[in-house]
Image (cartoon, rainbow, N blue to C red; front, side, top):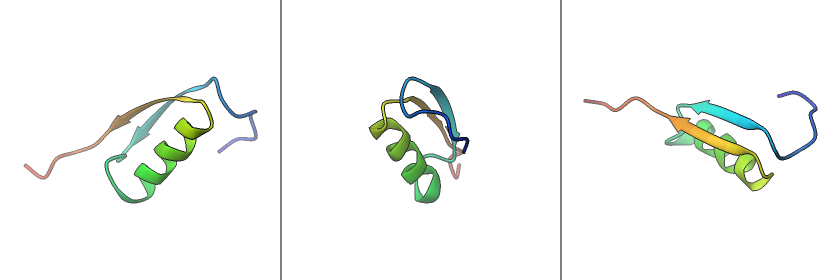
Length: 43
């Protein structure tokens, strides 16, 4: 990640339904960023 000031960015997190992707998405949202999450289902 870059050293941009926290909050106000729009961020797309791939693989955000679990693990590292979920942790990153949660952290960014807590910092005030707008977060969109994608994932692939097992089907």
